[in-house]
Length: 136
Image 1 (tube, rainbow, N blue to C red):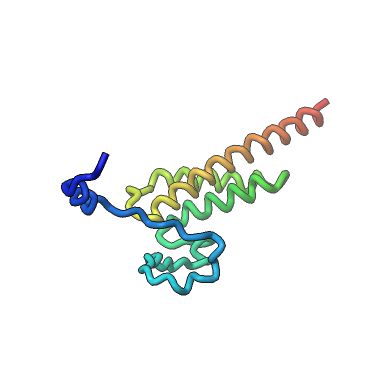
Image 2 (cartoon, rainbow, N blue to C red):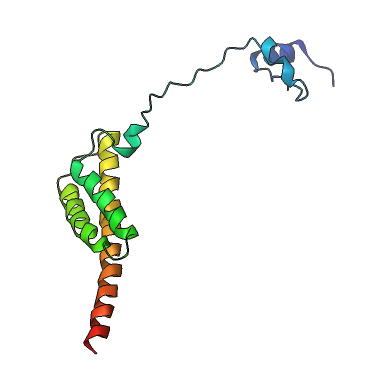
């Protein structure tokens, strides 16, 4: 069926497809004059991952004490108790999560409470088992 003049005018309104570039021409990237989007520069401070700003000190203490308490088999209970207490205090004093620091603070407090609780359960059960065996 032959195309009419009206159909050709309608074709001009449609967006044109771009031709695919050959994958063999990787060396010709310098010839591409199309504008590229720039990625936003992220000013990430590596120290911010270890001791972040705008994070509650209670949360940081809870997280690290819970981690140490969870990793150390016998002495861990000495770190787990303060870790659990600091985590509970951090969660009770938390503010609305309006910034990245506030969210990080909540997450660190939860991690501290969970690890401290697991440490207390594990070390407490082990100490109870040793005490029970010692009584016989």
